[in-house]
Amino acid sequence: MLNRKIGAWAYYWASCSSIECLSFRNNRALISVKVCTIGTTAYNLYLITVDDTPTFVVPNTIFGIAGMATGPLLVAATGEPHEPLLLHQSIYCVAQTVLYNWTNLLVFDLANQRQSSHEDALNKPWRPIPSGRMSSVQMRRLLLIAIPLVLAYNHFILHVGVETGALFILTWLYNDLGGGDENWILRNGIIACAFGLYNLGSLKVAAISASLVIHSRAAPVAATRIGLEWAMLISGVIFTTMHVQDLKDVEGDKTRGRCSAPIILGPKAAAWTVAVPVLLWSAICSIFWNAPLPVVLVTSLLGISVSWRCVVLSGTAADRRTWQLWCAWTAMLYIMPPLSA
Image 1: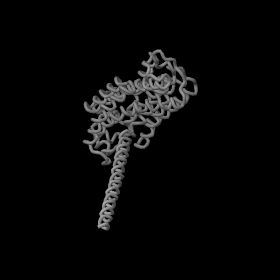
Image 2: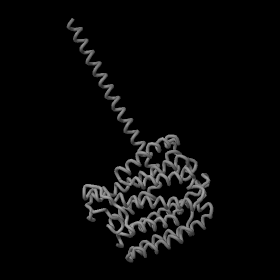
Image 3: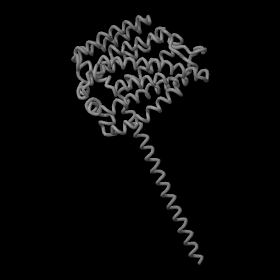
Image 4: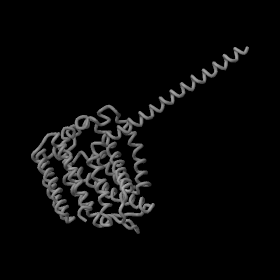
């Protein structure tokens, strides 16, 4: 009788141990699946936005941080004195400004890429849809989730809900209503307006974040008259030179039926319509800020490099490099205020 009881207890504990072991294995498998899912989603988000990050996120973040560093000349916080930031405070301001730009870029790219798989298969085959990592339906569902989340974050946390809402309208005009396909001048106009919102929003986010870390509260901020003029000037730069990025995307744009500048005007004529304004804007922005000689020289050299490459070099690889130099040139324009004020 005693042996039977001992055997029953041994069987019970062995069964419990097996169940616990199985449960532990299942939990490990579940955690592994969750980590894998999070990693896959994060990598897909990276692939969705990586190509446009140098065009939007990097320069617009620089615009906001440079404007904030310039002080009350470009943006004024109501009732708050301007104070220098410590390193960790600066990192916080940069991170918030990056998030503003990246989250809005994500919404734009989701709306754009869910309906351009044939074009991306030629121009950007690494993106999630042409590479088979996501379907168009999955991207549409992700967009449905992203829009309210991005709007809520930008409105309640970053205090730029108006700018974000206006960017959503421009995204709708550009993608769903074909504003980015039918006329290259209209396309440049929409993008120029978007850059104005990105830049003014970046300026506000950087200034509000600085106020938050210094004074522990988000003070109301507004761009000054010079700040608005500078943002409008940069939108003029974008309107007249943004189609430099179309030089590298001709084949994909033809597939989509997009009437880009290189397709309508021809590659050479389109290149000249970028080269000349780049040189002019280099001079105009230098005069606007009365920039010191070293700043003028660096800006001019970058502008000359972009212009020369536009009219002399061609081919997808060369055009991509020219576009990258154009991004560096615009970034140099953006840091003119703190270098010149």
